[in-house]
Image 1 (cartoon, rainbow, N blue to C red):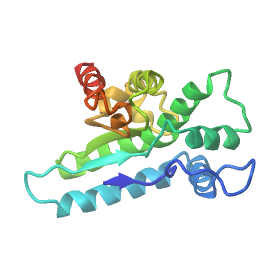
Image 2: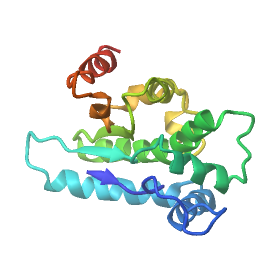
Image 3: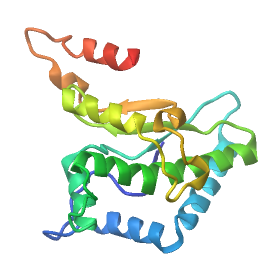
Image 4: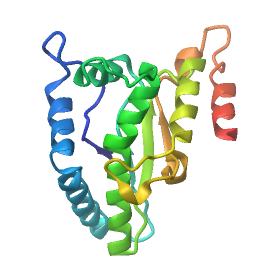
Length: 193
């Protein structure tokens, strides 16, 4: 199951502007420090947990292609190019985690406490994972320490501590006709971390 929020990696329809969906989400988070989002996510998670069969696990994917260029473009445009001295990759990770991943994960923890059932988190997705730069992005994302900007209960935790599953896109693009299993060592490397 994928949860909305910042939206998928879609560019804005107006040149020089972030997507409307991205802006609406960010403005909503800023309006009340993420309370309405966390409350809505926790309520939805409680509803799904109540409806899920005993013994089953539903993974909630937080985001989609969060390393895509269009995602980075939305972040950069929303903040008027001010990356606070960070690379665009590191700033995108910070924004994704602080504004979307962490508030959503905190809401899931609230739903877990209320229901006594696990609410499993799928991180992602990470696009183009066959490229070393995207594997590095994933490593940096997993090791990111949450500041707790909009999820104070999670301050000091690392993204990896909250992640039950990682979703990857386009791993097979590394394959070639002469080496169709070329993607497999990449998957093993990621798994072994």
